[in-house]
Each structure stands twice: as structure tokens, then as C-alpha cells.
Length: 374
Length: 178
Image (cartoon, rainbow over all chains, first blue to last red; front, side, top):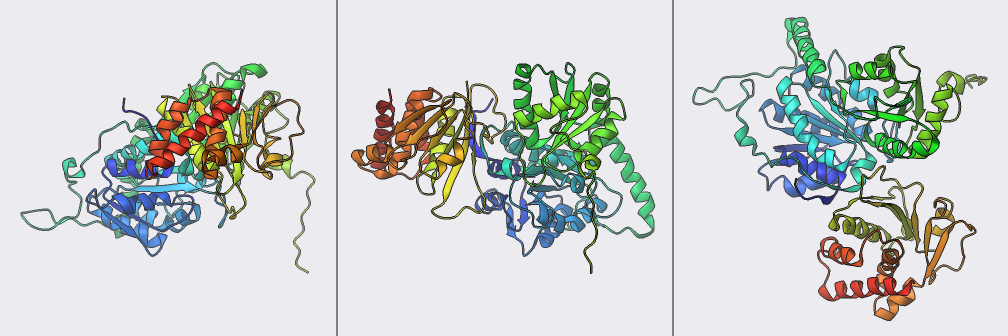
């Protein structure tokens, strides 16, 4: 294995993308992902690619559309409000069946929010923040090492199925430094071969391809044919990690940074007389519904730990489907879970009530609100 | 071994780079390490701090909310980080700049006059290295040698004589504590 070096998350991601053959990057600055465009600006030209600081997030995602249409490994990156602006472009990329990489280093929200790490864009990422019936791959790294190695995975999945891919991380993963190594050798995209659908220069009998996002009368056929690929993805591309998941009373479900706090909870659980396990979805779409459903019949309670106010828990409930009680331990707006706070919630989950469990109805009990228009 | 550390002080005291050095030293010694700065709307002259984890095993969360060790370089950081430190945890205090002492009695407190020692060596800017030297001696989490190796990677453009001063400061901090 390659020697480990200390790298910042954002820089590992940018370097990982270049190593994975990314040769076009367009972006617009926003904290906490500014080291990504900074790194691209410094290194992309040396790799023989192009870096563009676009005039806006919307311009950047549409530049990615253009670049991806030529079969180039293209990428844009931003943080929550910036990714909101890109949603129209993402929907168009999905409808044009173009592979590409979009990165969201989430921050607190809604609106401008704050620049703390958060996970409030789960719905936006997994439910398709843009319009129409579509999915994109959503990969959720939980370490600097995964940030560096996931761009390659994202491009491979995205190109195999012609579905855009997103890496969904957060400000803390982006800003932290950690020991990491790349698990692959740098890829020269010239060695990858051409797509039969990509746009190219019309000479020497090259096919005259067209890339459309609007297909007129064929829309229905188009959506149905895409659905077949979505089915394949949900069958074959689900990725997750398990720790003690088969041998626990409380199964934690968490992705990204909050799953790291769960690891701490797992090691400290014994001292508190608790048996705690973890299922960490690595792909948020496709979500590990099937595996979570199997595990749910082996545990007393399922506890979702998320840095948002009840988003991931909806997929957890769909997966568990009544086989076990599902509880939520929520840390919205930049709040941070710790091993300690998760274990408190896990103990409550076994009793079915208590500190650390968030329930919207109980939370608002007795609360009265009248509009204040005079 | 799992050491979660918070280092805090004025912006400019080198607390953030001391943290990077510590994490890099961990990597030099084939351990796992993480570093996270406090970032956000900090102001110049205000306090800065960072979280560092060094471990033989796996780094859990990079946010050290209950530190095993805190290194306090200025007065305003003392009341801020004293409550976080875990029971029986270690507090290293820069006694050159801090007159107060912690209220808690369930922690281990070691006072090191970092600035005075650094000035004696010839550069007040090396006070952060003095603190790191003391940390090495008290915890054994990383070796002085590890930090010396780390310096070459972290301070790539530093002049050799500055590296030499840093090394001296590190050793002086190590030698100061029993």
C-alpha cells in the first residue's frame, strides 16, 4: 500500500479528481470548499486540462455540461447554496445522460446558512434537487482518504450508466487534514477510449453525434429507458460499511462525518453496558434499503444519527419498514455529534424515550403559534 | 494510544501550525492523525484553536470535543477550554502570559513559561514549539524526533537557522518539564 501523507480534505479531493482523469473544472468560490478550485487552478494546466473560474455557479455547471458532452471527465464543486443554483443544470445533465462529477461540501442551511459542516442537503442530493424524474449517484465519503479516492469511483459509475455523480461531503471533511493514501495510479484519460455518443471533430469518418437534453416527442420513452438503468444501479451498485451490525441491540445509521462520531460511540459503548452497531451508507443513492431491512429484524432499535433535522431518517424508515422502532438523533445547522451524545441517544432508544431523541410532534407539543399580521 | 488534543491561543502565536506539526509528526511515526482548525468569522487578535488527534488505531471524529490534553497559550483560552478537558486530562499552561489558574481539581496542570524560554533561546516566535516539547515529554504521544522530521515538511520554506531555533525550543520545552 502507498505511504500515507497528511492532506487537507479539499486538496485530497482535487488531487484525486486530477488523478482520476478529470481534465475540466469550472467553479465559483464559496467557503468551505475554496481549496478545491484553488488546487485546480494551480495544477489542472500541468495535467493538460482546463480550469475556469466561472462568472457564477450556474455558468459553471453549464460549462460542465458542454465539456461532458465531449466525453471529457468534467467536474464542478461548490457548497450548499451554490449547489442549489446548479440544480437546473444537474437536471439537464441527467436528461442529456451525461456523466460528470458534482461536489457539494455541505454547510449549514437553509439560505446562506453558516460555514460549519452540516448534512442538510440530503434531500436535495438524493431526491433530485432539480425538476423531473431522475436520479444521480450520491457518494458520501467519511474521511480524507475516501475524499481522495471517490472521484475515480464517481467517474466510473457515472460513465458506466451515463448518470451524473455527486460527492456529498461537508465543510469539516473539506477543512480537516488527515493521513491518507490514494488507492490507484494516476489515469491518463487519453488511454480510456472514446464514447460512441460523445461529440468530436467531424473528420476521418468520425460519427456526427448530437447531445440533447430536450427530446421532444420521445420524452416518455426516454424516461422509461432511463428507469431500466436506475433499476440496474439499485441492484448492483449499493455500497455500505458495517461495524458490529449483526451483533447489537441498537443499530446506528449514519453517513459522512456523523458516522465518524458513531465510531467513537461504538468503542465507548461497552463501558456503558450497551451493544451498538453501525450501518454506514456509502452510496446515498442507491441507498442500502435491502441490507438495512435485513439488519432491522436482528436489533431492538434503529437510531439515525444525522446533522440535519430528519432527512436521512426517512430513507431509514422506508428501509426498516416497521421491523424495528426507528429513532432520530439530530444535529442541524452545524451542530456536532459526539460519541457521548450518540450513546445517550442510543440508551434512550432502547427505552423508547428520553434525552437525545428528536420527534417533531413531541417537540412542538403545547406550542401555539399565531400569525402576527395586525 | 488515542490522544485528542486542543491547542488554543492568540492568532499569530502559532497554535494552528503547532497542530499541523503534531499531526504531521504522528504521520512520520506511522500513526494515524487528523487536524482541524477552528474556522469561521474569527477576528485578528482574537483567539484561534485547533483539534488534533494522534492514535495507533483509527481516528474517530476530528472534532475533539472532550480533549485528553489542552495546550493553553493565552489567558482568554483558559476559561474556554478548561470545562472541556476530560477528567484526569492534562492541561499545559503557558505561564508567561497566563496569570490565572484553573478552578478544576480533577485535572493535571503543568505550567511552562513558554515565552520566557523561547526568548532565552533567541526567538519569542518559538513559544509554540516549547509547548510542543513539553507535550512530547508529558504524553509520549509523539517523539521530539517526529516533530523535527515534521518541521521539514510543514515549514518547507523555512531557513535552516530558523529550523535550528525551532529544534532548540522543542528540546528546551522537553527538558523543562519533569
